[in-house]
Amino acid sequence: MKTSRPKSPSRPQPSPQRKGTKKSGKAKLWGGRFESKTDALVESFTASIGFDCRLYEYDIEGSVAHCKTLQRAKVLSARESQTIIKGLYHIREDIRAGRHKWKTEDEDVHMSIERRLTQLIGPLGGKLHTGRSRNDQITLDLRLFLRDTLQHLQQDLCRLQQSLVTLAERYKDVMMPGYTHLQRAQPVLFAHHALAYVEMVERDKSRLHDALVRINVMPLGSGALAGTNYPIDRHYTAALLKFPKITQNSLDAVSDRDYVIEVLSGSAILMMHLSRLSEELILWSSQEFQFVDLPDGFCTGSSMMPQKKNPDIPELIRGKTGRVYGHLFSLLTTVKGLPLSYNRDLQEDKEPLFDSIDTVTTSVKIYAELLAQLTVRQEPMAKAVSEGFLLATELADYLVQQGIPFRESHHIVGKLVGECIAKGKDLFDLTQQDLFKASSSFDSQAFHILTPGAAISQKNVIGGTASAQVASQIKAWKTRLRSKSKSSNKKKKAT
Ligand code: ARG
Image (tube, rainbow, N blue to C red):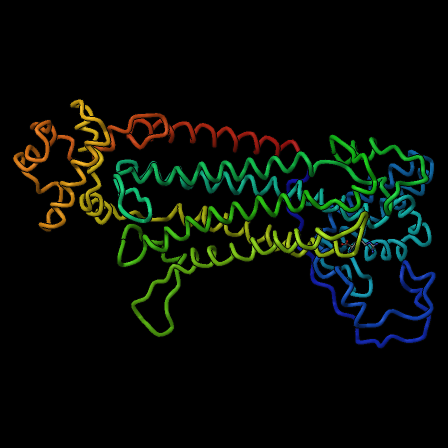
């Protein structure tokens, strides 16, 4: 499996405007049965080369494996196969160096490379496509692309988790209000809040990783739809390309895009998590909250209002979530009405996929950096945690300890809160006498539990916000992420 990301090739040059003419269409690789040239508008309408050119590394990798398979099946001689492979590597070098000419009239990455191959090595180049169709070729390219891309995304997600864990550790004693309904609810540690996102990202990683099981299946040999006449060893092709499995039904293989939809779905869920984080950072950096300071390098100013420091990055990530959701729906809708097997509609899978992958990858990378530089403002958080009746549940739980059923204690404390609100007081302002009046089960000890720190330390259950629990979560995540990054470094070295 590759680890280096292929550079995006330069965009194809649109061919000079040509009108559809009566001349022969034989210049196309598929042009044999055509009398006249393709209409210029149709040419640019059908072309996918503008975006599928980024698959060139995978297309060539697949072609090399196909060529070796044809040789093994004695469809190509060893010499022929060597010449073709040399030609393919030559083209790869040209593309990497920006020397290859991407032309709209070539239609897609597959035909662009094949045409160039024939230019380079002559008619022998035409033998490469024996027993293969662009229909099985494109799904192979996509599978190779996704295998590679998802591996990189896993590493970026680990980095994001590392930033969150480091942030949690840096501010491990900071308390803040925990919210439900965006109303202050109970005190929690800021670190606990940060680690909630580490959990979400872990599930995102595992969802995308699961998709790999279905992506990692080799489709070549399916031909256009029915399989191939040539005695090729599909397991051999799979082994060359490091696929553990091969597809079992050619009609399904050329028309299945559910693996792309899975990736789009995993991406949409991941963006949903990043969007929730964005929403919090936007709120928290507002004058109203003042819980955090976003790093200057990740904010922008206003062209008119000199005082402004705007949270554009979280806003854009929240905004871009919409387009990633849209891509999921666009492909679900594209595929839903397609009869078996391949239909050209399927070409519409690539732009949503590429845009989602690019959006998700950039968002994850930016957040890994931004969070590493985030400043948490402890004072406004401490102030917020000391107001707003966050300890009401603690008082109710105290009464439960004295033997009062929770429903009753809830009611007693609720009444107390109501009285405080009416008098413009907080729970901290209550006297021993006030408490005793509310319930004779309140004794002097009740005051000791009326601190945010005490409330937090009481939540000493696995998954709770008590310092000891949070500290052990931080430790566990650090070990887990360290061993992940060690194993991915090892893999990098091995490839
Ligand atoms: N560019 C096409 C796609 O993305 C490749 C397959 C074309 N197949 C065909 N029969 N026209 O789906």
